[in-house]
Structure formats: C-alpha cells, structure tokens
Image (cartoon, rainbow, N blue to C red; front, side):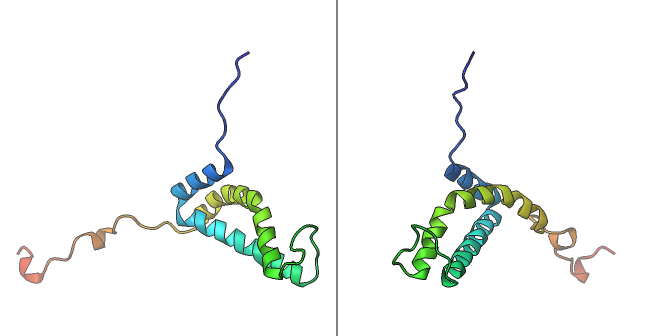
Length: 113
C-alpha cells in the first residue's frame, strides 16, 4: 500500500494564494470578517460577557483584540470559503474599453466623402 506524501498547504499559505487570485475581494472579505468579529467581541465584553482567560485585567479593546487573535484560524477558513461566493456577486471590472471607447472619433475633415 503506497502512502501519499503530499501535504495540503497551511491555512496561511492558502490565504496568500487566495489573496493573489482574488486580490481586493479576498482582502475585503478578510477585513470585513475581522471587523465583525472585533466589533462583536468588543460589544460582548462591554455588555458584561465574560470569556475565561481572555482580557482578565485588560481593557475592553485589549480583550476584544485577544478574542480576534483566537479566532484567526476560523476567520481564515471563512475567508477561503466566502471569497469565491462574494466575487461572484460583485460586478466585473472591464479590462478592455468598449467598442465606442476604443478608437477616437474621426474629425469631420478626416471622414471620407
């Protein structure tokens, strides 16, 4: 029985590849998820939720930052899964000018008679 020695790339490597492939869409997805997690963690800590081992003696912002860092693997997985879906719903940028924009209009003196 032959064993396959191929290893899947680490999550951070897969995220880097995704950033190259999707560019701003992947970055926007990552930042949106990060802002959402940080905001929810901050609000939860402000409302009095206690997370064992997180933010003990630290301020609310530091506790939210610690929770943000703890959720990094989950956010990477979510970014890997959501970026292609988000990209499908965003309008495509035109890489080539439209026909009417491609060539400048001829001036009246240059038109054939």
